[in-house]
Image 1 (cartoon, rainbow, N blue to C red):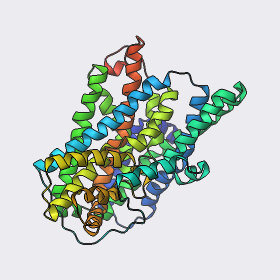
Image 2 (image 1 turned 120 degrees about the horizontal axis):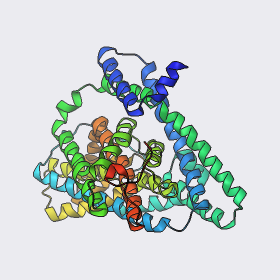
Image 3 (image 1 turned 90 degrees about the vertical axis):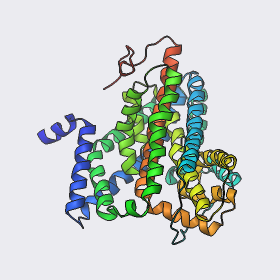
Length: 417
């Protein structure tokens, strides 16, 4: 019990760093320790399993008991999510023109669902909204989960008794506690995930696709460390980097290794609670961000599509590339409704330049190869941004109401440690 108590009293970030280091050392030193990757699989599986239930009950509870202040903050959150994704697309286009890439194409990727145009992407998005709510919960389709949770939450606010609303509140607290227990075991999960990546992939992807990975990494870091902080600074009129570093440290790290925005929803909600945010606000904005705040996906779609065009000798004008930026933004926001995520939207974007579908699917195959870096960093950028912009909208409302910003942003208001 003393060991457990010592473990629980140690900073979660410090424990995660220890798990990361141990995973790297074991991955380099030992091969074939099958029980270690299992820890990572179980951790991600548990997060993915609990996240849909958490979102569903939190949104219903928040709306059932909420006031009418959500819209003022919510509109700003949506604006920041979409604007940052669009700016990320522009960064990717500019980066691709400054440092054009070509690819070594070998094999064609296989996929069951390949969207043929932006209309199909948006159609999938709308159809997922009205899918069976139980089916949405089972499959983790967050657009459907959000839609039905909002419907039930608004109905509960109008019709439910105070006792019923209290039941919703108790259920959300119970699920939140279960989430905290799972997150507390993150160091073991991170250790397993890191061990798998190090022992299976090694450094070969860096030699074969190093320049492409470098461009993706530089664009994503530019958005994370320059573009997004600039947006936050313009809204809050304060130094944004304390918030940026905290979100990257407490959300981006776990998202990098889980490679799943959905799995990171519980982590983000825990962080929002620490930041002193209103649950009514983040219960809706965080799962929404996991579906439409897709800076990393927009960067991937734009860079990989332009690389495909360069590979087959198509001369793309800068004007056409800017159109690609808008398509990448819309496609990225709809990626959650398409099997395979952002990579399977590459053929749709490639069609803008007349790249053949067979070539485009080979580009998708390259995306899967470099996914250990690309998808990890993409998810870290997307997921940490969910909290950054939700917190930005929350703190902007604080300032409007005459309340001071949190102490870590230079104000006087206490938040949880």
